[in-house]
Each structure stands twice: as C-alpha cells, then as structure tokens.
Length: 102
Image (cartoon, rainbow, N blue to C red; front, side, top):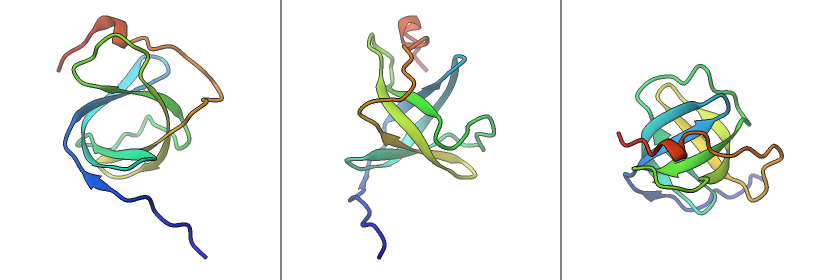
C-alpha cells in the first residue's frame, strides 16, 4: 500500500534554498503542500544532494533564520524540499543577514 500524497496547491513565489557553505538556489515555486515545496531553478542542481538539510527563505530576504527543510527530490530543472521540525544538523543562516534581493 502506497502512502497518500499531501494535497498540492499551485503557487508562484520567489524563494531561496540556502545550503551549507553559503550555497544558495533561487527559484520560483511550482506547488506547495503542508509538508513541502517544489520549485524550479531553471537548470540541474548538480551540487545538491538528496536528504541535504537547508533553510528555505521567501524573497526578498528579511531578517530571520529561514524554515528548516530537507531535499527530497531533484529534477532536470527543479528541487523538492520537505519541511522539517527539528533538523539533525543545525546551522544558522549565512545569507539572510546580507538581505539579498533578486
């Protein structure tokens, strides 16, 4: 028996996925659910690994640490993330204090 997928809602919002070593991926959300987001970045994210922990930020960046998340799927042009309540390896945002706006 397969697990039921959470309901998805189409939504287009500019976001930033922040990963360790100041790596960041900016893209536009395609769909959002209660458990995660799929967003398009326009190219293959070859430097991202499945299950990598990150922080999700809405654009433009404001102060704050972002929403903890985990990479669950990689496609040719996008990334799916799952929201997590308690990241196993915590880190603070290195990018949000810069208040980038793209």
